[in-house]
Image 1 (tube, rainbow, N blue to C red):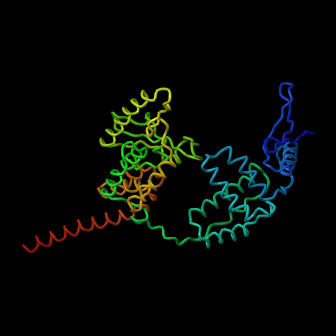
Image 2 (spheres, rainbow, N blue to C red; image 1 turned 120 degrees about the vertical axis):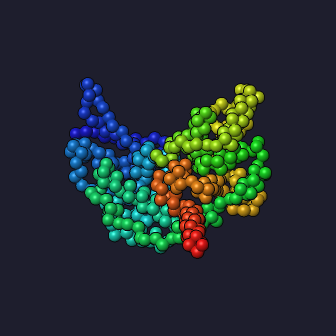
Image 3 (tube, rainbow, N blue to C red; image 1 turned 180 degrees about the vertical axis):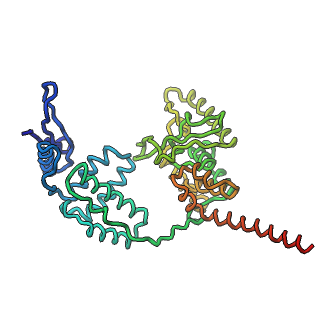
Length: 387
């Protein structure tokens, strides 16, 4: 019979047990069990039972849903997902799932309970997107309770669905906070080139890049000869100066786009300026490869951009956020003849429907222009017919 034990370190419990010897040496498996000793004891008993029975589960677990959601977060979310996703999932678990299901044994959560909860979400003030995230976390966590954790026999979420939403999903120019060329000039007039946000604004207005993509941009992604910009990094900020550079949010976000001579000239000047500042600051210069930096070489962080943009909005008085630049870039392209497919790639949208739904206001203008073209042809035909 395998032997097991439990230990506590830094506020967390760990359970371990011996497995078969290899090359005459004893081997031991240790796993995290969260902050509850009772949970650790239950998981140890289950692990020993599974090990002795070759992985078969003789009975369902009596673990509470509260214990399970915490266990799933610590053993899966923290070890497999990005920091920003970890933060979002923890909020979903603590604010929504534990209050709704935490008091029940995990094995007693039924499809009817979940469907009733989803129906309540549908009648709440939460957005459809937030409700979809809650449903995703619930489905994913309970699916893993079936396998690989084998704590329940069936996933009760597969029989449930969110109610139909009738939310107004129409994106207007006002909702997107689009700015005019005149407003862009006003922004530039009050944002000197020495301001850390000057370059991020120029990049996003000329490319449509997201805030994290701009902050994560490095010089190896700029090809001056081919006039291209490659998006392959994204910066996430978690504290005042705590940031992490990670992979883009989706496969579609990896992209290489063409950039115009205006931005090429700006980037060349910035690179020369960074070389001068590196010499001026000497050993006090923060040596990095980031495109957007302060004079001392430290990278410009996403929260700094958010703060500066809120200040710009206060000063100028019209609706504006950094994301306005992305939407404005796309709108200007579409209004001047670019195709939806081209804009989809440029923005890094995984689905063209996202591009079409977001910029439907432009599509309507294009449709009007198209029928005007046809109408002019008909009027010309009528005039020729009367001659």
